[in-house]
Amino acid sequence: MSTQREMKERNPWHRPVTIIITVIGVIAIVTLVTVLVIQNRTIAQKYKYGIVLDAGSSHTSLYIYQWPAEKDNNTGRVEQKHHCQVAGKGISSYTATPYKAGESLISCLKEAKENIPQKMHPETPLYLGATAGMRLLKLENSSASDEVFKAVEKTLRGFPFSYQGARLLAGQEEGAFGWVTVNYLDDRLTQGLETTGALDLGGASTQISFVSDEYNGSESPDNAVSFRLYGYDYTLYTHSFLCYGKDQALRLALAHQTKSGPTAITDPCFHNGYNETRHYAAVYDSPCVSDQKPQIVSETFIHLGGGNFTQCQEVIKSIFNFTSCRYSRCSFNGIFQPPLQGQFGAFSAYFFVMNFLNLTDTSVPLKTVMQKLSDYCATPWTQIKKEHDIPLKYLAEYCFSGTYILTLMMEGYNFTSETYSSIKYIQKIKNSDAGWTLGYMLNLTNMIPAEAPDSPPLTYTSYVSVVTVMAILLFVIFILILYSLWPKFNTEPKII
Ligand SMILES: O=P(O)(O)OP(=O)(O)OP(=O)(O)OC[C@H]1O[C@@H](n2cnc3c(O)ncnc32)[C@H](O)[C@@H]1O
Ligand SMILES: [Ca+2]
Image (tube, rainbow, N blue to C red; front, side, top):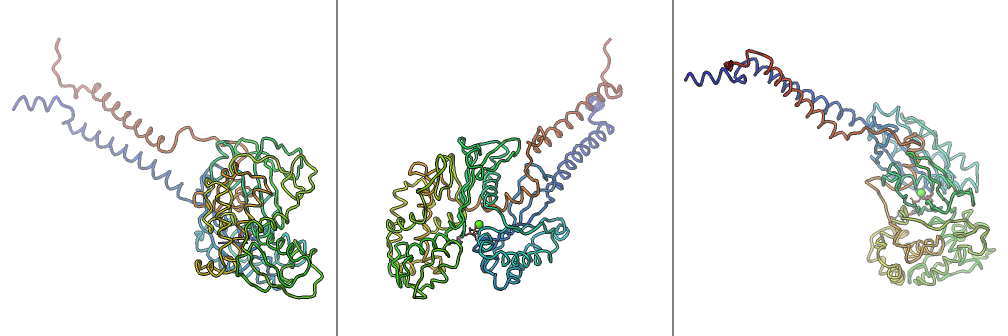
């Protein structure tokens, strides 16, 4: 018994004062770590928002982006929070009733209000960028394009967001911001990695943008866009071909086939058995083809399908001009293009079309891809209609669009059967759509710094771990010091 008591007396852990110090110490450590974790998490959960409307030639889309508030002007990930597709056609189709262009946007803007916390509305920037449809309308009828912009602006100003303007994007901006989006989402810019080229196929225009070691902007300076991002310099080659989006390219192909004003054509790019009556006025109602309109007697022509891939390729080749080039090298229509370099991401209609055709795998040899497309084009229209339940307008055009995509890439941009595999058909990267809108917003909100921001030396997890370990260590040292200094603790008999 007495030995037990002695041991108890000698062992400081049985003294109330030691127990109290230990409990207080543990509480202090737990509090310290909890405060650290909660403090950091609360900040991380606060988001900021931005809205961009992509007023394309075929339709308008609204995108909401969000990013952690404390990562403003930093490398923090901006991500797509919401996408809303505006019902109906693009804003450039409302020339007769411009106010309807504004009204068409209301339901998506209401969705945006619901998707962004109310208190953040006034500080959420709202942008609208219009592309090739409005570029064509401006060429055709500049006051009509002004009216559409006015109507759209009126609607946008009626919402509680921070309206930053509705404007026409230049082709170079459209191409360059698409490239920024792809490389930002792939995290290539902060690391200074080799960048990915961007291929965007819209309804009215198409863009190609990439970095080439052989291009510094001195040859054909109009195609150069220079950036300094996160401390790295880039000189980007970019070109936007107006009238070479897939809808306008189809008009160019139809114009080529109806030059002489026939009453019927057999179009190899449409399926056998396809038979539609088309109005000349409707086909030629675009500045891309209006000057080619034949002096005709008939108002309409019958558009028949021929279902022949090789002949379709020939028709499509004829819409490109390869004869003149005043530079060291050209893509088509006398436009300079440096040698292709690196990987490419092909999005928008490149993806829609190749995905429908099950041809997005670019590791498949180009020859096989062409054979599959050729088989698809040769399939009769009745069979195609039976096999797919999608709107007939889209369905009828996949043979044309697929052939156009391959011809544009191989003949237009000079991809080869070897370099075809450097293309990836993409729709989204990490849940955000590939397209110019994200790059546009990052630029206008100054969210990509020119210089690499100072990053903390430790990651958040390492930071919390180090602080925890150090706190425990200090506490143990404190107890040990206390134990060795406090005579009452040390009850062992002294041996003299
Ligand atoms: O860039 P611009 O030229 O202004 O045009 P846009 O922005 O309206 O063009 P999109 O990329 O949205 O679409 C390109 C084309 O793809 C078409 N498209 C959209 N969804 C499609 C789908 O699921 N299948 C086939 N085509 C589709 C659309 O009608 C256009 O002709
Ligand atoms: Ca577009």
